[in-house]
Image 1 (tube, chains in turn brown, cyan):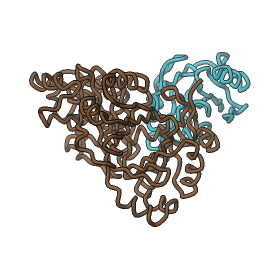
Image 2 (cartoon, one colour):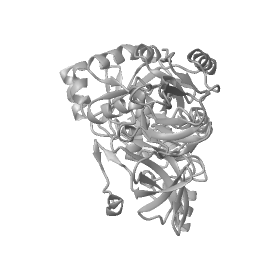
Image 3 (tube, chains in turn green, blue):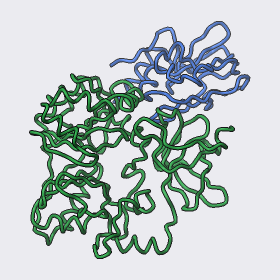
Image 4 (cartoon, chains in turn purple, blue):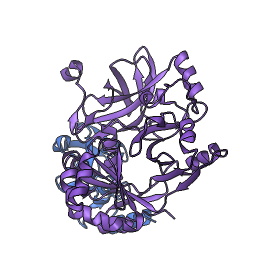
Length: 369
Length: 130
């Protein structure tokens, strides 16, 4: 039996096409995945992301525990701030990527992936065995992501003037508790917006209010093309336990400073840096028509081979785009094998699109063709 | 939600539809197939004058989600392809039995006994769902 979020009936009412996602029955789209994609880029859309796992860590050792558990440094946090980070194994491989919020000095909240829920919880328990710390999964919390340039305008109607001021003041990667809602200015689309945690019992009524405010429902299909355009990795596709953040375009999330902070995987990453990182995660833009797909072979002439880790079609650019892991010395173009043919692709540093706009220059070579 | 399966057409097990007009047949994908694929974003069609065998892979339709091969439902020679799909592949989603047709074939034979009737196709789709 697939699990259902508290918004399941809302999705059925909106004629969503439901699919299994990591054991959850989730909306793929509500009619057209591409329209939903444009809706978020140009206006305002919302996603049920209640399948994601919320874990609260409380206790005097919470900070000490997370300082060692996570590759990014939670000492950067103050109450209300959020941090994106990887959780690594001893080999530097990525167990999961997550957002950690500091709510108070002894109270942190993690949002981890749903596909990795069981192993993440087991890893937390295992690592915390000697600490004075409580680990509590919050299955009573639903989460709705509202994303797009018009979100601020449209969502205003749901809040009092004082609450609206709190939202206006909310900086990227910060969060605030407003009544029963935990509102964070975060997202997975490359657009401005909020991820809002709401008690599961209140989620359907809140969803209806967002609908009434003109925020359109969007499915996991659009969520995937939006995050890919925004150059945001998907755990399980773009990284996993066999690769490190340094090979996953996530070096910026690893805090090697201060040098005296030990964290799980640190030694392995330092060794990898000293030996030289052999591969990197880049963006590919297909030259000409077509769609890039996961696991397609990438050929870098005179250098070696790689593989597409997330491939799709960019509705904003009307081109095939992908994230791919390629040899570290790959330059600005490569070939992708599609149905036995080798097709030229431009290599870029992600993102492809940010806040509705293309973020890279097409090379003159690509333009000539 | 039931997808449309016009009685006037014939169908392949691989979700192509076939319409006979005089000596040429038109081929497309069914409403059920376009619905399963979702928004199409790219279509690759065979060259005109190409000769195709029964069941030969001859076109590709790609949605954001997946790529699907199109198998030739009737042996014959390609006489026309729907070039409007190159700029607007979503015609297949909007009008699978009309503006979203894929290609036209002049068949080598006149007997299409391999094909399914609308009722047979509907039963097959229903059985795949279980």
